[in-house]
Length: 253
Image 1 (cartoon, rainbow, N blue to C red):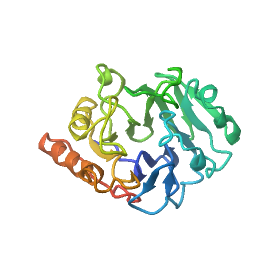
Image 2 (image 1 turned 30 degrees about the horizontal axis):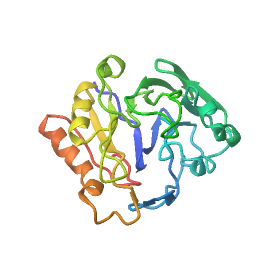
Image 3 (image 1 turned 180 degrees about the vertical axis):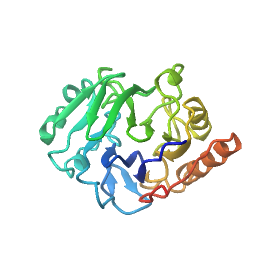
Image 4 (image 1 turned 90 degrees about the vertical axis):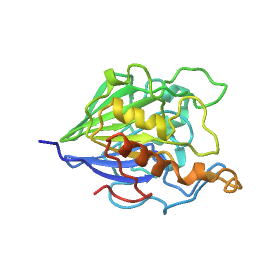
């Protein structure tokens, strides 16, 4: 018999609220209408139960669209934040938030409430700054309660992904970015379909697309903004994978 799926709200980009066994996990929170040169193009600013007072926040890596300090300041100070090992040294502003910072490396597990959070590798540049040191790895996370949920963060498919993540009930997979092109360490809909197959996801939801977009670029390859989620769902279903596209703020039913 299949495990019950967790409650999930996709809040846009890589921000999701996962609830399993009554424990709320908030991923890579971007809770504002703007982020430097990016603007929220779909959905309202996230709000509602658990958004500002989850049981834990997990950060996949230090890029500003995943570790967004203004959004982290909106989260209740008593909420612990799980971060890649070395992140507080690479970005000292994290320490000034006042939240407990729990540093993890691939394979480390943290028990929060009624769930276990395990860090897994990601194939992505984890540096905060383009010319900074490669001291902080990018991570994904597997949240295990009644169900097993894989939050991939930002990654491409890597050789031993199946050794780290497999037989998950729900996979949150990045399918695009925030601009008209994608560099190394990202998935497009085709690569995300491969990832869903590799981890043997019972159900997959596309993330990291269609929310944030640079000012003035709406006329440049606009299909890169709006279509990757639907493309992923179509490709996944062709390959016998159950996939659901959500709108920002929508809950998985």
